[in-house]
Amino acid sequence: MTLALAIFWVSLALVVYTYTGYPALLWLRARLFPRPHTSAPITPRISLVICAHDEEAVIADKLENVLGLDYPHDALQVIVASDGSKDETVSRARAFRDRGVLVLDLPRRGKIPTLNDAVCEAHGEILVFSDANSMLDPSALRALVAPFADPEVGGAAGDQRYSKAQTSTPDGSDGERAYWDLDRQCKLWQGRAGSVTSATGALYAIDHALYRQVPLVVPDDFWISTGVVAQGRRLVFAGDAIAREAVSASSDAEFRRKVRVISRGLRGVLLRRELIDPRRYGFYALQILSHKVLRRLVAVPLLALVLVSPFLWGAGGLYQAFVVGVATACACAALGAAARASRGRLAQARVLSIPFFFAMVNTASLLAFANLLRGRRIDSWEPERSGGTP
Image (cartoon, rainbow, N blue to C red; front, side, top):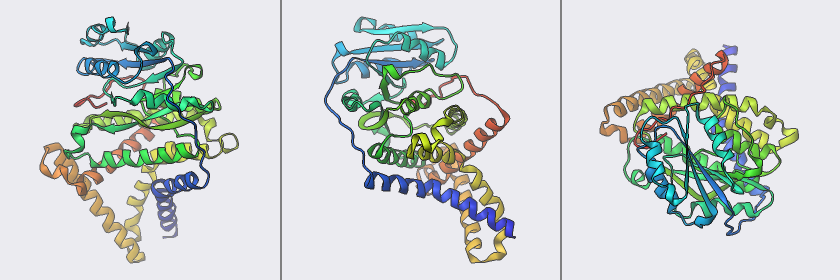
């Protein structure tokens, strides 16, 4: 009983810290120790890099979107790097060559070598990276580069949001929206007090001089953006630089993507493990540990709670209530999965969609952790597209 109690309370403390304690620390730091940065309406020469593999469904829309942004065309270089696309991605991108788009038709080697080759062709002061299916708001580029007016800033993370068409039509993805809402709020607090933990591939930018070749085994957005902090500069949050994507309509595709992303993300932290040293990086080290390690591995203490709590049934009403709560949440998650699979109207109910998403993410985390323990690497790049979603 003593061992079960110890496992229960240690696991519960880790879960509570991950989901509430850590955000509370960010809020306090932003309030008590703000570190503002300068922003100005500058328009440096930028190179916008789009890596693509079989993106014929979205590449033309992406390029129309980028070329229609409120940014001086003579200060914007657009590079499309195709990683061995077998569809019409290259031909559709080449239709924009007379509008200044550089198209690289490269052999299939994976996203990382393609990205490294694309950067070799970039001549902008600022490198901007964006996914092929991310549509940018008109002022996104101006907002993204504005913080570079501050010499301490070496990178800026854009704000990933869901497309306007979906925000008004519930589709069973409330859990994912809730996750990104929390992530966005954390980035706001991080940016106000120092540096954001990392950027997402939808939209971010770094000083060209800070770019370093990306290893094969890590997520490119994590490696490139954290490299800014590793080299002594700030990575800030540009909240007005908005990139919009669609919510995945396929649970299977989204699950596979999360396993891949979390697996590679954990390896990325291993390679950047020096960032967890508080003697060198201070509070940022706690951010990496909390956001990139504990949040990705919180499924382990969650699983421990589920397994050990039934053995504490006789220890009192608190534990009995916990067991009932866990059983209810699991039932809602299962019903949410069934409703989403059948595309029934119940999939729109938050009481089902949020537990379903929570369970899916943490199951993906457990598989990713198992991949790490087994030494299984996921180096291939197969974008999961369902309605334009990675």
